[in-house]
Length: 142
Image: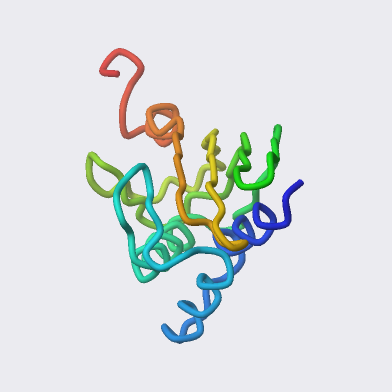
């Protein structure tokens, strides 16, 4: 597996430093500032905010790599991110209150690397499945 994938995954599942400068410095070891996320520029502060929100929503957060590909300046991973839903989960349909359930989301990220850093991320995730598992949507409503 590409070491950049390893470092990136750890940023999302290991506790983000409480100090903003330390958190930004940690993310700067993996990502450019800004990084393009699905074609839109995102400053590192936004990635830190998203990682903190994810970690507030889930305890016991961990990941499993299902497959990975490395072609030098591009690498990709299919993964499962899991954790116990113990805090509010920010979603496109609003915040989902904690359920206490073990939830899992399957995703695919493609990284474009420049000078050893992630300059672009193309990401998809099964958010619909996550919302159904959290009880925020029913299969009939989906």
